[in-house]
Length: 183
Image (tube, rainbow, N blue to C red; front, side, top):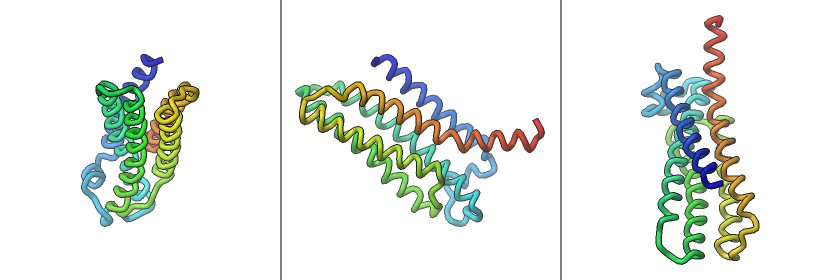
């Protein structure tokens, strides 16, 4: 099971990078505005959607890399098993909540509205934080492994759903460009 989760994690990481690269390639003329733009670059609803989707995709990628790396590091720490579980699940819960805060913060700095993509990313992150908190209570405080299989499945499923959500916008952009070109 651990090999499957590790393989899935690396696959998701690679696909997230691919989505960011694809967004940057597809939105070539907006590349600098996506990283350094502000309210002056947001002239239409499409501009708001584009910036919001890019922020969501970038934030999902960064936080997935950070939380995965942090999780791998935490499991190598020498401490009692129960304390390690508590630290691990609380840290993963904190990462999910930090993602929510970062996504809100990035949208407020940019001054753009939340796209459907960004909203779904928020919902999935909140679901992830609830799963992490339940596992913290069950496994970290009560020392009960009853929900561990459901936890593992939920984490993988929520990460795959997040990947799918951030992939929708670039796929739509790509298919629109193909239909405009008449392919």
